[in-house]
Length: 379
Ligand code: TDX
Image (cartoon, rainbow, N blue to C red; front, top):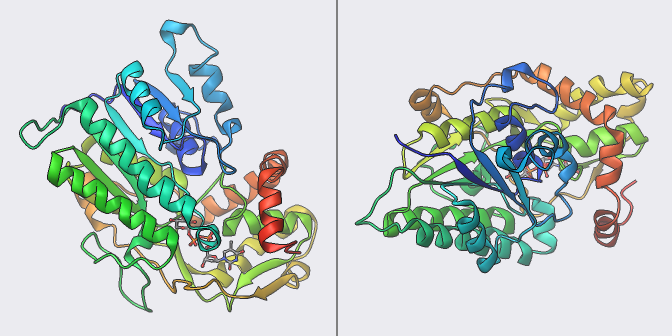
């Protein structure tokens, strides 16, 4: 393998998973976890993000200081570009300006509930945005079936939701047929297919990963875990969709990012890899666990907080269960999870409770207006 990995374009680098990824590559971890500081990365990163409601450059303050504006121009290794991935002219400029040799594509509209209320942004960013990046990469790198390159790579980050919903048993493997149910998952499924098409049709070297539910620092508090932790802190109700029996498989975000980095380094072009936590939880049981960990830290008893659980109207088309078989990445690339769930969940609860300013800041402005327009006050 002779991938350059010198000038990496990371899309969506101000979002939850993307910002944790950039921190990880530069040897920084939001929670200071030593086991996630060994990326060995020596190149430059160009972070392209259009800073939607979920993007926050505060997540990268340390990276900016140590590797970005804070250092001499010739030694600089981190660059931020506020650009929409659908803006072809700007993406072309960035490829030329930084001589991009690798794309790691995190940028996406990611929240299922939002996709139900307003699918258009999901189709635009997830489908058209991915297409734009692929097409610019193919042209800039001059790829074709007759000119296959092994020094460049386009890695696409995707989700287990493309496979649909599982019953009580079984796991999604890399060969499970796609069966997306929500506007979000169908937009991700579309983008996965276009990525694969660019490999088969144009010889663009791609890899693809489908991951289960991530948790950890910097996740926007519309997702289950940060939402519940923040509501416990504020004494608000804890809204459980339906009976709360839906099952998700949870992985610590830095374990996911280490897997992505291993695929980018040594995954086979044209292949997809499933990434999972092998850690299934019913939503309601997970919430009991979070209450147990968070209540003493906010000076309330678990019994008291349990009483704030409210069962609300279920999500339409709510997938019953996701679970991933990740034996391929383990066997082929030797990837293993490093964070235990006990440790990761405690770290995450602590992080949100200790970073109230981060939560309050990201919840201000545009998001607040959107949530009250669409959901009213959830309390
Ligand atoms: O208030 C809530 N109450 C509730 O019961 C919220 C926000 C969620 N839920 C349930 C719905 C899901 O069964 O909790 C589960 C997790 O919900 P989300 O955090 O919204 O995640 P999910 O829908 O599972 O999708 C997530 O994981 C896969 C990400 O949002 C996706 O981007 C990723 O692809």
